Length: 375
Image (cartoon, rainbow, N blue to C red):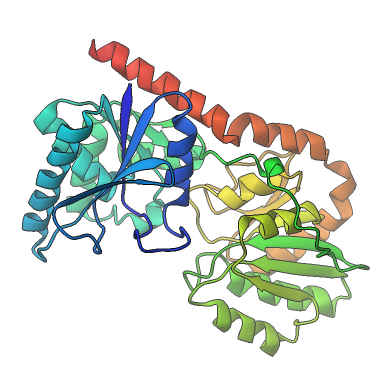
């Protein structure tokens, strides 16, 4: 069986460190244990010519690009390039990641070749522009003709089902590489005398990750004499903005910005935390939530949709989003209830649902189901 992944977001070939689409690469590599996988990134502006093919870090990777600014001409160019990839690779199934973009291309290629396609939806509904009738019709077309529409959280499945009631959706969580397989870096990150907590969230957007509520919550906790210390892992365009906010709030002594961290450092910090936090306004899923639970961290999460649908009452405390007071109350409750959480049970829950090999097996079952139906 040959699977062609089509992804909307991926690092350019020139990037020394992969920053875009890491999940796509890791899931593709994990699936290679069971079947043949190649990846197509159709929006690479750095390539020369219509199609580039190269083995990148052990994964056969096709890159294509359009040269036109006209949307219709651009899409037709991508379809022609995609057909060349199909002719070369000869996949049995096309697996597109997100309906808008990769899904549109998968639909067009499937229509031309009759190769079945599936969608894994990672995009938050809040960023999908589904209030536009045209966008909703085009997205419905993709979901309607897909052989399976996979959501990465129950919240995403339920909400997409309400937008597209005639389409079917199911859940397979994002897979994470076993964090226990990454050795600690040997550093001590805990601040003694405090309850230590971690948020892992990039500063790629000014508001989505909820720092505008979490940092003022830390100010209130400090004023109340609560001995809580917040560790922050993540970099991005708004890193300096929030670092300046922390200084203006007078909380630099209870907040540490670790910046953009490699996986070893993030996991090393996670291992030493009392609990972890997701303060987002909205999420489709939440890989950092999955990783923290795998490393035995109880979670404090906001009702952001995807993140709170990843946890259970035995693994997390859930509070309202977009609320400083809700985060203050949630942190204080977590500090008081830490001993109630069974960390080994949290780890087992994460292993069963999120470990990447277990996720790969679920995808293999799905692929086989589709192939069997097509025969």
